[in-house]
Amino acid sequence: MPCSCQVGKCSCKDDCTKSGTCPCDSSCQCNQSKKGCGNDKCTCTDCKCPTDNSNQYLFSVSLHVLVQAVLSSTVELPCSNANQNLDSRNSAKIVWIRDDQADIVSLDSVITVRDSRLSIIASDNNDQQERILRLANIEEHDHGLYRCVQGDITLNEILLDVLIPPRIISHTPEHMHMTVREGRDAEFSCVATGHPAPLILWHVNGLSRPGIVALVEGRNESILILRNVSRFDSGRVDCSATNTLSTVNRQFLLDVKYKPMVTVPFHLSYFRLYDSATITCQACSIPAPTIFDVFRPKKAVPIKKGLKEKFEEFVNQTCRQITVTIYLNHPSLFGPYVCRARNSVGVNHAEFVLKESTQSVKQIKHITEHRPSSSVMNLSTSPTFISTNENESPKRNILSTLVTTQSIAQKNCSSKSSILIFLIIFLSILAI
Image (cartoon, rainbow, N blue to C red; front, side, top):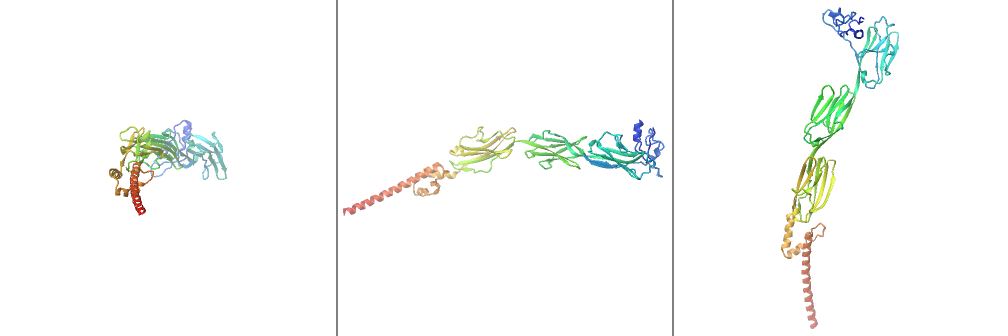
């Protein structure tokens, strides 16, 4: 059957396709107008092209209107024969055709396909007819070219562009949690769909961390590779996909395993014999330490000698601290100590030194090597040696007691001499 074509426009594609003849070319060239619409084998003999005096190739372009609609919304596609020079207006019916599927959607005001979402809004006036195609609850497959025709005339062509919000359809790791050892690489990926194609962005702990981002050709997939991760990269890794409609996110949790980082906060270094020294050590690591205690250097067993008290507590999810009190009742307890922590990644330690105060040693040596004298008596009145504070060392209290006893003995001797003199004077008076 011959293809009925509009002047200046190849519009016989559907008819030629249905008749089994090869489809016409969409461009109609002037020098080929006598042979048909572009393709010599097509029987579009009624097609003619506009002519001019420039003897140049001219093309008849089929313009269409772009209509954008969001997924699940409702859209109305207009069609009217107003201002059309149609001799057969009363006999020809307006037809909606799905061009990309070659389906007749409606005939006049009747829907010809099985789809309850479609309907025709009809309006007939003296000078025009309107057949509006209404699509409710738009789906992704509704995207395509819709053409409204009456007889041989195309009244309207509409490209329905279905806008789809972004959606992340797959990602790695699937369980949203990754654990990697410090110094190694961490790899994440997101695959997103949507129309327009969404843009995928990555953030580490809310910041754009430098890394390698690769796109997979043929699918909207983005791969983030973090090189040489450190403990400071632990936290959130966000994948966000965004287009003109909205933004969606996927949040991963990154745990970087590292060996313990041990610190000893500020503490006093000098102590006197029989003092109590309190030391606090802190260890931070992922995973948590399996061993965390205070040792003497090159010793595998935690300290026991002189240990007065030990207390452990968690500072946060990755840090814990231990506080020990050492009673320095022997000179061997002075010297270096180490806080040592170990986990599955490795071992680390921090060192501290308990030093003996030389001033107190000199004072004790001076007291023990000299006999009591006036200078000792003066020292006995000093608050340093007669203090009854519970924190004072026992040896200093003993020395203070000795000095005080000697002073009292001397005072007792003086009192006895005075009484003896008094008795002699009293007896002399009686004799007279």
